[in-house]
Amino acid sequence: MISFESILNSDKMEEDLTQCMNPHGEAGKKTIEDMNAEHTPQIMWGVDNLPFFTPKTILDVGCGGGIFTKIILDKYKNAKAVGLDISPLCIDYSKEFNKDLIDAGRLELVVGDVTDMSFEDNTFDMVVSNASHIFWSDLKKGLKELNRVSRMGAVICLTAAIHFDEEPTEEQKKEYNGLTNIISDRKLQELMDIAGWRTAIVANRENSFCAYIGIKYRNIN
Image: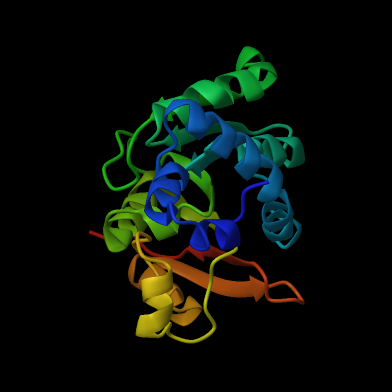
């Protein structure tokens, strides 16, 4: 099973990180399978800490192989979702993984970039994403785009295994060479607030993963 630790200890770190960001080719299929399995605990942690809410429309950003989509639609059985991913391979994989949800008319899958989405304003009342924000080409723009496509009061849940209580050192940033957004939990929280998202940080007991959970409290021009 793939892990970020094994990637960082690999001589092919840069190549492997590229697979995590945008799975492609035969190696990409294995990456998707492994991420679906490995990331389930951190996704469940985020879902278990969500406030009481009954969304109708959900956006899964960086949906990957579709595991977060499956879990969130299982929790909210009357909701529909759109899964967005920059990787066509992820979208194709998720089409098979969540075929039952697509056939039931509860899921649509789209190739796209979080920094420039085609969805109309005020479309979704929940946004979820697992381990994707660290790869976004423009974190501030992505968070503002999520604000634009979400309704007032929408709930957001970002889950991650890579997170920092304090601002990471230059040495730590070098260790994660290739990841775009290596910043402290507090800094991410501040950026989310600027983008109109009021959030709380909830880490598990071992501090091995966390969830950034909040609501849209204002529109951003």
